[in-house]
Every structure is written in C-alpha cells, then in structure tokens.
Image (cartoon, rainbow, N blue to C red; front, side):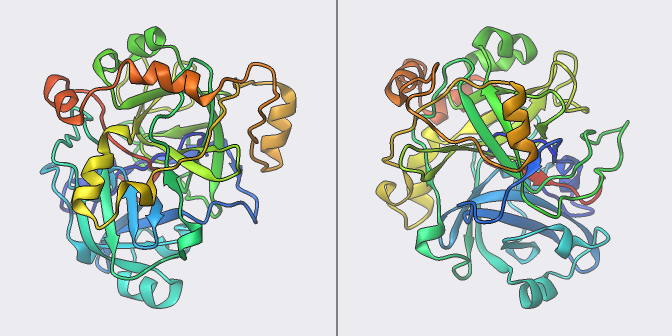
Length: 373
C-alpha cells in the first residue's frame, strides 16, 4: 500500500455516480505497528445493505468531528454530500466490515463499534473534475474516541523541497488506481498502512500538473520509494512533532503523472501526489462545527528532516517502524523556515477556488475502494 502523506479520498454508493472515484489505495507501504499513537485515524464506510460499499480514511480532530476528502462523502456528479444514513465511521480494518463489497451499516454499527454520521459538510468549492477544495467534515452522532486520542491540524505545513512526511491509510494494496484499464481496486488492507513521502520542487510538480502553479492550499510530494505510494484518495499526510504529538498536514487530493491526471498506476516513475493542506480551511471548520481554532490547531513545533531513500530507512519501513523527528539530524530544517516559505504563497480559500480549477481538496485522507463503477 502507498502512503506517506495523510489524505482522505472519495467514496460512492451504487447508482449515485459516487463510486467512480473510490479507487483509492496505499501501495507498497508497511503496516503501522501496534502501540503507535494513531488513534485519531478513522475508517469511513459509505454504502448500504443492498448496495456496493466503499471506504476511505479520515482524521478525528475531536471525539465527534472527522476531517476527510470531500470525494469520500460527496456524490461525484452533484458534488453534494451523500445522505448521513449511508455513512458510518469507525476504527480498524475496513476489510472486516466491507466483506464482499457490500455491507449492512446497521450491523457494522452494532458489531464493529462504528458510529453513524449526524452531519456531513462538503466544502462549497469542491469540484470533483477540477479537483478543487477537496475537503469535508463529518460530525458523528456520538463520540468515537476519547479527547486524548485526537490529532490536531498543522496550520502551516513545511513546504521546503525534500521535507519528509508520512502518509497513512486503509487503502487497497493494488497499484492500479481503477479506471477503464483497471476495473478492480484489489484487496483492502487488514492493517493501517504507512509510507514515506517527500516534498517535490514547485517546478517539477507544475510540470506534472499545470494547475499546481496557482494553488495556495496544496502540497506536492513524491514517494521516497517508487514502489510505495498513496493512490488517488487513500492517505492522510501527517508529521510527528518535536513533543511526539502527531499533526495532520493534509488530505490526499489526487495522484498524477505527466500523461495522466489522475494517474491510473500510482507506482509509475513519475507518480506525484497532491495533498490539500488545511491552512485555508480552519475558519470554515469553526463555522460549521462547535470547535474553536484552539481546539484543533496544533501549537507544537515541527522539524522537517530531509527525506532519504537509504537502505537503512527501507529496512525500518519493512519492520513497520515510523520515522521520528530528530532536531540534530543533518539536513533538518526548522518549522519557521518552512512556514515562512508557505506564508509568501498563502491566500484565501475563496480566491484560490475562484481563480483556479486546481486541487484544493483536504483529503487528508486516504481512500479505499470496494468496487469500481
């Protein structure tokens, strides 16, 4: 499975046109070891007892509030939120709930400790074709975790080239991203997956996806290992702070290569990942929920080491360990250095959505696909 950024992807229900974007996965990654402080990672299942179902990943920023990609909980035709009666949120393997691509949501709630959505807010600027404002918020009917298990948003993620991040998600383990050539998403992961990513240069990222040049709420990353990556929706981009807390940097919007946007094969040599950062959506989240900015925005310090594809890091990933931040590692950058580069490019979410058909999604999220429509 691919993952190294945290992002969330799209889910759909049969007959709605939503499932067409559910082919999200994490390929070639490693399983997150038990005991990791990833209790905020949520598994979102969309479907019904008589319909095919899909799954994606979200992040709990409070015991009852989940941020995810809009594509996860929006119809891909209307770009509007699906019914709350078709969405449940839980923790653990989506494969245990989805079964043969169908699911009884009520049974999953009763037996697998899932919770129904009470409210679904899709950002008004979301467009599944233009890949803009790919952010959504799901408010749960009851708490899913305790307050000490939630994660907070990184207000200004480091954007220096080669800065290292981790992506996590519940995606399929197949490298193909669906579409006409790859109608099946492949098997779902039975354990949360992780993968390492590094920030790409703006010029190289723009060469892959022209719209990126004008975006202010997006972060472009590339796989540290070409065989391990997130894939079109399955992934939360995260970073461990100096105090060991985990911050949410972004939600996966799309994976692209120079000839294919979105890409159908996410482990191609030119595969590039575009995440929606949440900087420009903090105010929107406070408007649609009862949360204050201080409730879900991290005040921790983040040090952005330079990603490396050395054999030692490959061995660590094979063992399922996570990279740790170390202020004394060579090539590390301070969070203030990286944040200053982001400040110079930042603008309001409304202006970015109105001027560019770009990817402004929050996907922080990671997406699983049960079947392709």
